[in-house]
Length: 251
Length: 221
Image (tube, rainbow over all chains, first blue to last red; front, top):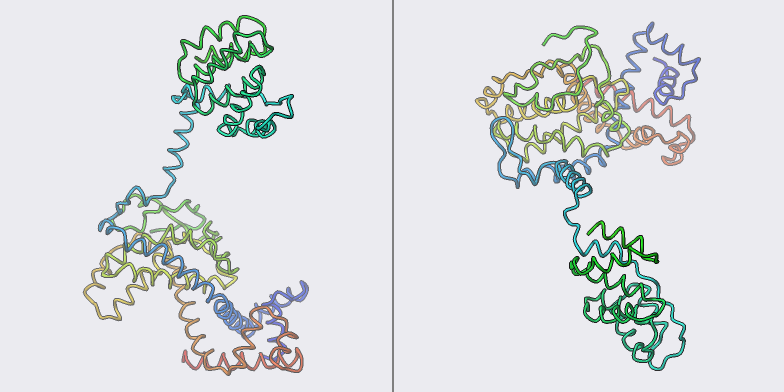
């Protein structure tokens, strides 16, 4: 073997041989046994060197995986000595868990056993935003109350709206919002007082009063009390007619 | 097991077929003589490219069978971990051969590699009785992987000898060969090792490789 032969072999191993030369190269491998043997040796050397280059990274990875998969084995109760091992449920592949979860989700989707008053209420409790006309009220900031209410911070809203109602007792919008805040924070009786006042009054929010009164009964699961209120709403044209009809069907 | 040429390879491999006494997979036959690429070859390709991301899959799927077998044959889980690691290293060595094509299921092959490693350790410890007991077992799957197993083991022995010969080379030769194998350009290698130019690198490389070859052959003889 000449030095030039090894040069060609090196270029072949690096994949640097042009296509025309490659054909001649492969033909020579068939004709020249010593040349083929030289290629085989160089290839084996290269295999060794490539393996060695990757070996530190490989060993690190193997150590990590070994700790993960064989340490478990050590801790676990000894596996069955003949044939198949008994794998505890919690060490099995989580496939069954995923399947079970999917099955449960499907069942819940089709047949919802948790159709409770709470989530029925949630479906319909889409509260109107509070936008007060008043901008200057002594002691309490209407803006802060608005903000708290519109962001769903009903506890804060309740406190501030309660103070505002003292200042503006005749504002129906304020009454409604205070009622909603009270309802959302579990002050049901107080909420109903506000809704009742609205429903019995003659303001533009009369229907809101009836609707929210009905909703408050839905929330507490008192469907028998909710039903007549909803039937009234469903029977005449109003902003809540369709909602009331739908809700009645679900009760 | 009789394998006829052109027989279709059965896929997927049965996960139980290397478990002693398992009768589930007796009827499954494989054909490794047709030299068709097995789907598990993707793991060999990953190892070849230095991509170790699929190894966790190999551990998850195949470590249990090896552990159980080693434990049944006077070994511990730590012994199993060692032979399993050596088995993967052996696969990685053979994976560097671009001509190597995996034609049988990886799990069965790995199991046999690990099994042979543990047997040879038992022999070294002169625990003849245990070895005899193990040898008495009949593995239906042996024929499936035998050819590939031999290739892997040959490569392992060859690389061990290459390693011994390599360690006898000069420090400069070792560096030169390593850098060139890592894909570094000759000009860059020349600069790093303080050589004149790429031609010097080639000349030195040839000399080093020749020396390495002679050391290797002297060892084999």
